[in-house]
Image (cartoon, rainbow, N blue to C red; front, side, top):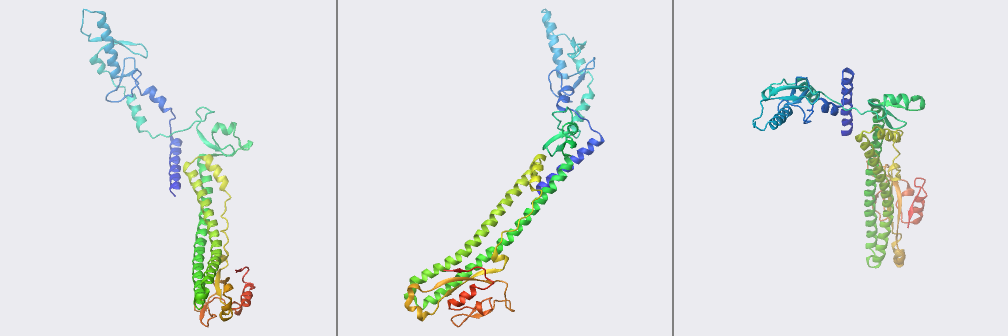
Amino acid sequence: EETLQSLRTEFDFQQKQKLLKDNRSILVDEESFIETFLKCLICRELYDDAIHPPKLLHCHHSLCLQCILLIFQKEAEYRTSLTPAYSELPTAVTVICPTCRTNFITTQDGIRELPTDHRIIQLIDFVSHTERYTTDFCPLHKFQPINFFCERCTTYVCRDCTIVDHQEALGHTVVDFEGAIKKYIPILDKAIKEMDSEKDAIKTKHKAVEDAIENLDKEENQVSDEIKETFAKLKKILEEREQEVLQMAKREVGNEKTKLKEKLSEMEKRTEELDQNINEIEKTKEDGKLETLYRTSRTYSGYRSEPVVKVREVDEGVVAKFSFNSRDENTLANKLQNFGDVSSYTESVYTRSTSGRPALSEDRYGGSRYSTLSDSRYSSSTTSSSYSSRYSSPYNRYSYRT
């Protein structure tokens, strides 16, 4: 926004200068003009009203008062040197104009009484208070201001260039500065808008993925509680196995989290690329160079926001679920070396009961646990066959087993 405001200010300034030029303008080489007309021919100091006032000689040439007095002083000293018997300086001497060599006899008081050249004073005032603008001239065509930009050659050109070397008939597209700014800036603005839109979409999905990871943490805690609850009955026998199964749970959940984090990494990488593109465009706009604006606008003229990376858990509304398979504890009490495992399954986060909470289903201990799967195939079970049935569901396209 700051860059756009700066461009608008610059555009308003150009419009104002254009209006001034359309009304009335004087094109001069300011440095040459000051050197020629507003500086003393001898001391090269700028004329002013106090120390270096311009005095008009009898021949109508002007010098500053200090230089005329210096000429008088030198001439008086020279005359005195010709007559050693007289040590006093003469009161009147001949002063010669350094421009036209016209001479006249005067005194110091006469010099001070010379009329001030008010034309020069008025010119100084004009230069000091007149609004000015700088014009770049074409290096090929003398005194032709550069007012156009050739898109094909990506260079600045003058009016004569558009007739000689950059004709439209030869395939050159020439636009004036104002038209170029109006043409390129909207293209870049549109590209930035598309990028911002894509960033917003990424941000939304980024938050959804973070929530999914948080839910996975809850799932990890839940399955860990189940494991601990089961192994508490066989604490002394199952301590080592308990740790192994906990690691299973952590690994399974970690696999899910890793996949989601990879999605996050992809989105963050894409966001970084978009930020780099935006920074490049902003820098191009801030520099204001038309050739750079043109190339950048050509690069991004057809830019459209890409679809945000697909995340199944968010796009399809499914989350990985985990449970601990304790099987028959009495049967497995003698087989503790290979007791227990951890498996995962998915369920829709959009399936809710009429109360807004997940539907209740009875767990393997006779209690109740929340589940969004009401079909009997998805109910919690201690047999591996029911888990196999769950994984064969058409609603689950993949599953994880350890």
